[in-house]
Image 1: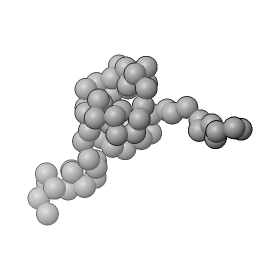
Image 2: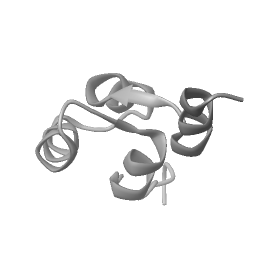
Image 3: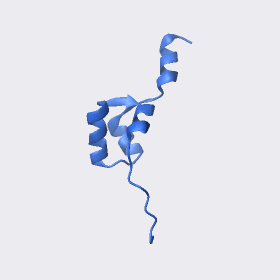
Image 4: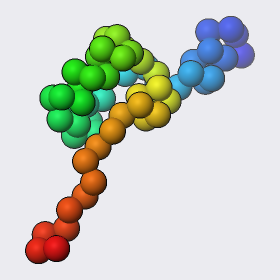
Length: 61
């Protein structure tokens, strides 16, 4: 395994903030917050540690 492969394994997948927000159904305000915090791209780990979502509200509850 070369240095680049080791780095990729250690960091995980690199996402654009827009793609991550769409994939995980984040709202526009959260997407904007992540852009300010992390810049246009970030590792999956960084995004998962910093993303916030509204709590799930069951229907009729």
